[in-house]
Amino acid sequence: MKNLNIPKVSVVTIVYNNVNLIERTLRSVTGQTYSNIEYVVIDGASSDGTLEIIKKYSDRIATIVSEPDKGIYDAMNKGLNKATGDYIIFMNSGDSFSALDVVEKVFDSEEGADVYFGETNLVNESGNILGTRSELSSRQLPEKLTANSMLKGMVVCHQSFFVRRSLAPQYDTKYRCSADVLWVVRCLKKANKIVNVHMNVSNYLVGGFSISNQKKSWKERFDIYMSEFGVVRTLTAHVFITLRYLGHRLSKNNKY
Image 1 (cartoon, rainbow, N blue to C red):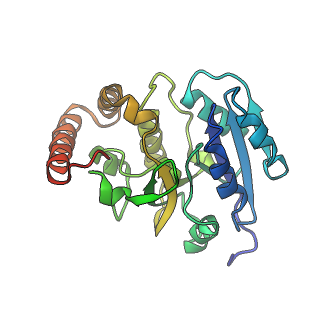
Image 2 (cartoon, rainbow, N blue to C red):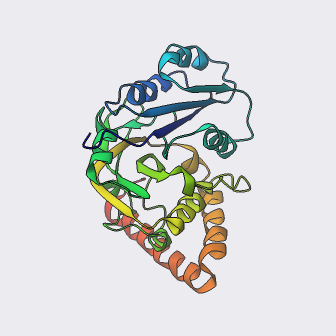
């Protein structure tokens, strides 16, 4: 690191009954070369052996909570409440950092940002990289990221999004599928300095929560846009998103 007074980064992992994939995430976080990471793991009272694997890494985890929750965003709020770092990022079970030195590289890129963001690799359950999210989905990572960028959809993954903890709101748990969209929008509205680190930050496991609840997710996103951007911009955005999605499916026949 260029600066010996480096910021503390809280990495939060949410998991429930994911014994086959949790260790991928644990190794990715605990193996980081960055020297000031606070690791928080929130387990939803797993019964499949997940907690036993987590405990193997207990000497490198600052906080372990294992108790029932009311859904993924309730669990993520628990992580927010336990975190004490200057910055926070969520790296949930099955997801991982793209390299063991990626956090160090992010915070070497530029000092004092409110948000650092980057590209995301899509991976399958075997951990094989399928390509970047920008390559394989209809959502392109913008060069410059603002709250208005989110009118084009979830253009950045929270696994590749570091934000000052002081700017991070609680997740609105009335949204069961798309609370992360609202969370990112509100983080970006508060942020002044937003830095694109121009690297692949994380590996995102495809086939997760939002895909299996896609129709509900779309409805929630519409409601979120209405509350954050108003009627005209919401309707315009959804015409664009729909046409872009259909064009992507027709041209590439790609499910991501």
